Length: 390
Image (cartoon, rainbow, N blue to C red; front, side, top):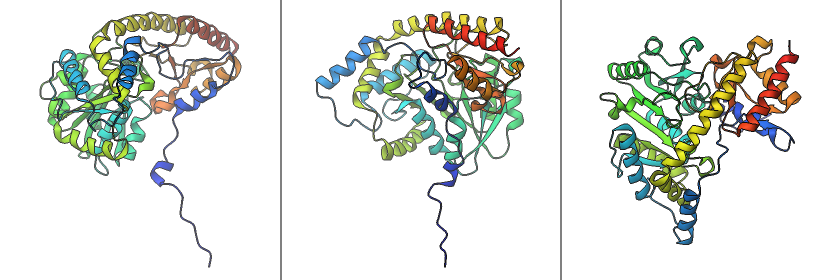
């Protein structure tokens, strides 16, 4: 009798597509003369003082496991930093968990709080890891379309229409990747009101909180009664040019942090020790570096945004993060074909907007966290490519 073999892999994981960002990132490897506007990574080297702090910790022999929650010095620095920036004080002992980048923090938050079938409302388009993370945690993603006419904001009236008896949480990723959108005060207040009225959790991924141009970042933590129902997610990768160090953190009610810590404990144990000491130094002395880098991103942002509009790729003005999200549908190509042909013909990497959700279809994401001369050259090549299509 023939035996039918069981599948080798988990069905839930099999159904999740690989990251559209990494696919285009891998294209650049070994291709001479290519320019990548694909991966959201600062071109700045991690500042000297941060690197020196890490090396000093190694030389002094601080190379063993740390607490699962992270070293005390870092948790205390995070508590002080969050109080300065948000006006909210967290207890370093049981309300802060240091994670392997904010990506792990998002994953832990979802797995620690969602039961099978719980619905999570999120913006469409949004960061590529959100929907897979919700699915892997047993939840059901409920994307809410954001509109270019409204600057890709997640508006309370749209969120309210998506709420059902199964809704467990709202996931906020603002400033937004891939659009560069930021929320207005009325958006934040309205979403907080809905969370209170419907007894919802809010996952607030604020990794780009310092990268805001022409306006201040508005955190939902500042709204009345939101500390007890918000899982605040942040990190060092973007603002401090520390992508490869993989240090993030979450601030949340003790009951949530405890459950997140258990998953963290059984999977990664702790964040690499030297990286944690680098992060401490970043919080203690890094503010001038942050301001320097933000000013440079702002200069690059204006150049890229203006160039896209000048070449006929309509692009709303991004106010946060470090991405432009131009519309390419007017070229007659879909976003996937546009990105593929642009790389083949001009050696410029952008990411198809559809990688970030259905609402991203017809757009591409271009990152301006690279040198200005490379941005200018990439825009020259994109303009040449667009002209050939007409």
